[in-house]
Structure formats: structure tokens, C-alpha cells
Length: 455
Image 1 (spheres, rainbow, N blue to C red):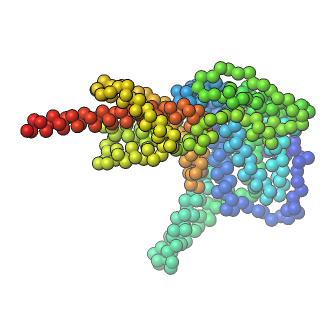
Image 2: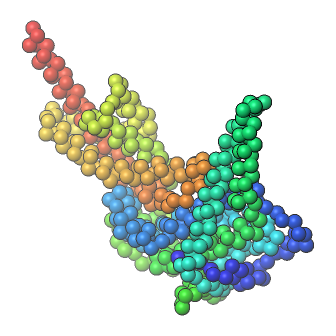
Image 3: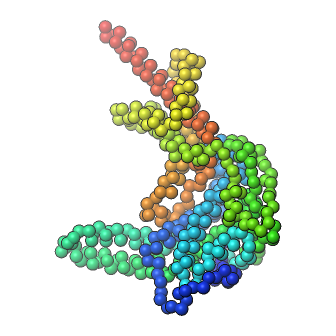
């Protein structure tokens, strides 16, 4: 991981971007106060990116995640293409962090230029030189992790205090506890980001953002053209500015992004004049993927269908206890979640099975079960990651402070081929329907035999 050693390096290299501060003549110490929660959330995102870009995480991404059967079949087997998707995902996350820091920097006394610095850094217009060391990496990450932990503690104690103060008038027995809790909250505020100045907080996060962007450039430069060149030499790294003509990310046709096994392509580089390779042109130069589940807005819906089908299969096989009517409710839930076109596909496939197979036997029912389990072994993890990925976007304030690696978009149904995903879902639902149909016929036959014996 690459981080700047000199705390003021990025400011020194981009001094011409500085905006005079109207507060420079005052000695008032402006602290971020309530914005500590937003700042801690941004730090959490940066720490998560730091861990995701570590060498062990990248090895796992390449050797395990990208080679998983679900991604290979539904999205692509081309690692250049998959790395480009991961790059876009991480850069979007870093852009969100930079936007939050830019908002805070407008309240700084001496660091109002981060928005311009970040924009020009990404465009490769200015040379910025830093040093790096593993010691600096660990120090900065640990500093942010400590700030995150303190803000999480502050949030918890403030909620406790709020609940105590709602009891009006407070019971006499609680007055001492209330006073003690207020002192505790005040102490944590003093120790946490709440009492830090805007300059202190922006300084820490801005340097982290620049170092993370450098790491992104180093990691993804073999897969993404147009990134600002980062030269690492003798324990130092530098961003080398582009010339008047620079190259942007490869423009890729929709045909080259078909899901499933793909031939390796040679990206066509497009030369442009005086243009930014990322800012302003980013959306035009990202991989153009058509006919995906995410583009259709069905990722969460299809993931829930798959997870409900898994639950129904476990109940059907006796692996999960089911209350009376729970199986029927699960089947109704699946049918309600299915779009009309998938309802028609399932009905049509079932009619084909009845015409082709006729009466079912135990071996055929066993084959259906094995086929459904085989599909769910690779489709189920993608569906679960999709639900987790969506939940991470809507976490409450407390869980947003968890600085753990997040689910990447390529692990979900977001970039999955819509036709292949729907075909797999239909096969699962048809297989489960056939199992239910066979079990129902078997139960009816057993009941008839029992009735004849009674007579």
C-alpha cells in the first residue's frame, strides 16, 4: 500500500490550487462536532478500501472470487474484464469518500483545495511526489480505526443518555446516573473526532485518499488504460502528468461483454486531446454492459427468489423444520416475486416436462433434486452476496462504522447476464415443482392403498 510520508506533501505539490481562507485571520478553533459521525463513516469506507487493496485480499479476489462458478457462468471468465469492473467499483467508492472530504474541506482554514487537488490528480495534470512505508500505512490506518471506534462508542453512549433524559422528571435515584452519563459523553466527545478541527480531520483523510488512489493505479494499471502513471522507485512514488494527448479507458462494445466464457480481447485505445481520463469521461469509458440483471433493476428481486427456493428445498428435503402451511407460503412468495415473463417460462417448462416424461418415478424425482442442488451450489452464494451488498448500502449509522471489507459488485447479480440468470432460476423452480408434484402423487397413491386395505 502506498501512503505519503510528508504530511503536507500534497499541499506543497498543489499550492497553486489553494483557495484563500476567509478564516485565516481568526484564531477561533472550529471543531467538526456533529459531523464526527459523517467523518467516521468516511474513514470506515477508506479503511475498508485499504484492506480490500491489500495483497492478500487481491490474491483471494483473483484466485477465488473471480474463479467462482457463479461469476464465471453468469458474468465472465475474462479476468481483464472483471478487474475493470472491480476498478470501477472501488473508484466509485473512493470518489464518494473524496466528495465527503471535499465538503468538510470547505470549512477548513488552510485546506480548501482538496476537491481541485483530487480532480487534477485523477486527470494526471499535476505531478505529485510522495514517499511511502509500511510504518506510515499502519500508523494512519490505526489512527482512523481508533477514531472510528471512539465515534461508535460516542454514538452508543449518546443514545443511552438520550433514553435517560426522556424520563421527565427523572427519578431521584437516576439523577446521579444521569450526571455520570453526561460526564462520560463529554469525555468521549473530547477524545473523539467531535473535538477535532476540520483541518486535522481533512488532513488525515485527504492523504489517505491520495495514497489509496495511488494504490488503485498501481494495482489496476495492467487492466485499465488511461490511469495516471505511478512510478515507484527507491521507496518513493510519484504521479507523472500526462502530455497534451492522453489515452482514456478502452471503449468496449456490447458484444465483447457477453456473459459466460469469453475470448481475450485487445482493448482499442482512444486518443483524446486535453481531456481527463477519469473525471468527466468516466461514465463514457467504463465497460458498457447490456442486458444485465442489475441494469434491469432485478438483482435484489431475483436474489430473494433464489434464497426462498433454497429454503423451500431444505424444507422439502427435511433439512429444515417447517410449520404447517409454511411450504405453501414459500411457494406463494416465490410466485409473487416472479416477473410475468418468468411466470410464463416456468409454466411453459412444466408443460414440456409433463408431455415428455409422463408419469414420474423415484429415480426421476431424485434426478430433479440433484439438478436443483447442483445449480444452487453456485447460484446461492451469488444471491446471498447480492442481498448483503444491498443491505450494506442501507445500513443504519452504527453498522456503517464497521470498517470491514465490503462485498464487491462482481460478487452479486448486478453484472450477471439476465438471460442466463433467468434460465438458471427457471430450472431451479421447475425442478422443485417436479419434486413437489412427485411427492404429492406418491402421498395420494399411499393414501389410496391404505384406504383399500381398510375396506
